[in-house]
Length: 380
Ligand code: SF4
Image 1 (tube, rainbow, N blue to C red):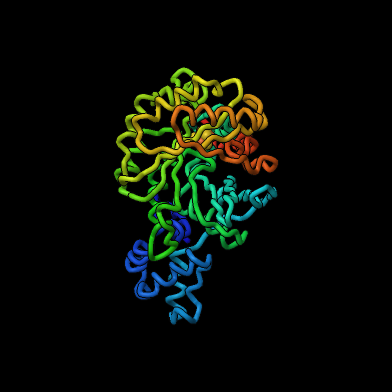
Image 2: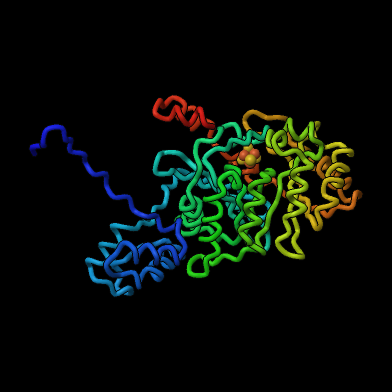
């Protein structure tokens, strides 16, 4: 083709499709109305089938759409689910712990873990970021740095793949996989809207837990979103500023007094119970005075439940794993100080699926060698 002088022909990029798993039912309907000449009436039913059965099939006879309308829907929307790279399972006392490693469209990988909770209940631990910039010293993901944020659609896709590809019977969800969910607040809030949408997945808020290392601004944003039955838990791990700053760099930005204040004001309902997670690190945070400091920190917080879990050494261990006796002794001190405590059984250790073990440091190395991704290195 001949161009007039001084003009350049620019190839149009292919139109990008809207990922359905990042929308609520109402948003899908609104987008269909905006983009399509007809067919928006079927959008809600198509949406429910996509989210609840993992299939986007506008041509299916049940929707009664003309072939051109079905084509329009396919041209504008997609249910993009990541490829499963690996599924690893470990049998334990309470059932099978399983980790899925999923490859995203840009080649990065994200991990989620199915945890058996006893009495046929299961929890899927999902990721909110690829890597994490919080740098907690006991955590494998923290060693990766932040490679990138996940989109809401990629967060939800972990659940859809778990349910529809791995056929895992997921009941509850916890944002405790790779990443700090409150460091990715837009995607987290959109994902919560999708998860709880009665027109789609319709998961009860009480079955979802957001876990944070103590991201005060994020806690305030979550409070403002108004989820009254959602669960929140904080990874405390030390109630002494000097020690916590050593273990968790976020404590330098948000010291304990400020974190405590943000938790005092997080009161979504009268009977709200805040989860306090404590990873027991032998020789670091397992003294009687550590237990008393936890009790002092929790005193103004209203109802709490402390979850103690033994440290899972990764490939660069900070310390060793505690013995059962050491965990029991620490739990005893917490109870003596008046705290309700549950012991969390370590699961998935042999398949690197236990708390603090998720992440692929090799991905970080590969990414660092790719000059096109140099900007990410600087930003993480
Ligand atoms: S514990 Fe959580 S917040 Fe801390 S580095 Fe690991 S993934 Fe990030």
